[in-house]
Length: 398
Image (cartoon, rainbow, N blue to C red; front, side):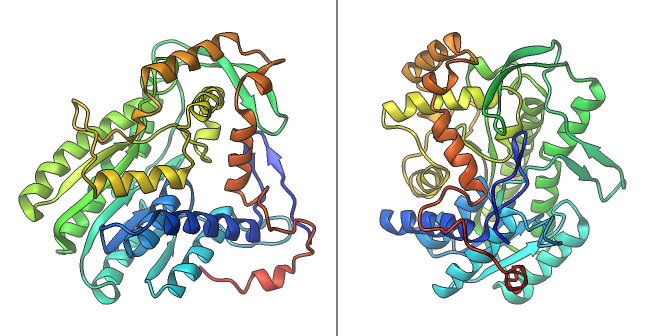
């Protein structure tokens, strides 16, 4: 069959396996061109199959020579109507490239929130991964979580708190700008979003690993967060997502004290820049801001793809000597986005954007290109007219 892009709203229902392979290879080439750096050697990444998690895995494997364990919730091929997700292919082709370099690249597919998965990963670290890890990256983006201790399932809600918010959003499928109203969250929705996207599961992972003595001396852990500027405040930082991120920050403070005492380690909240990810594409109103931001940052030579951002994060900041820390102790590689001159120009664009002019006044083309690349489309050197044998694809295993 020939695999073509199939979008539904701001979600891609298809992914091209060989396009995903080229995306992984392109990121690897970027890291190799930038050069090696001193970093961790045994890394566990929760949410490793796409976006910031995948870019982190590539940066650390091919930049620092790290062996990695990647955990993700992805779907393989079901039938011709339901093909594998992009993350499924990313896992497979990352593993192939890493093992060609003599690195360990173990993939676990399943529910990172479950006790069973924690036990499986712990056993693997003990028996086949050298018995210790020196970095844990928490990069999960999920709409729901089942608490293994209570058995209850919680669903997140991407909503403002207090008052409804109106603003423009982008329908990626139709390439149209439309006005969106997002109603205010209920208390239950706020609490559930914190339960899904806050710091509790992160803490449980660290505590489980610590209990089994699997954390190396000077172990580090980081969770990727976002703050954003004033123009995104109402639907992000002051909304349900922001409440969950605040919970994660409070969790980080507790973990930092615990790790400092037990293994001379540290916990870090990393505030990333706005980026094109599967998660950001479905956050209300954020895509319009991102398109405007990309235009300004491109013009100033500041725009970064995911791999550029993550290489800089680990090389310069987490394992380098160029850390930028704010008053709350958070690492701020988003400082380029938050520059006063950048935000001033973004505000000017957003003030004048309309359904008629948004393609001309923003970098929608950049956003669209990056979104399609997340799913393996629009990549040079890929024959998208190739008739692909599904049975051959099924032979690939993560």
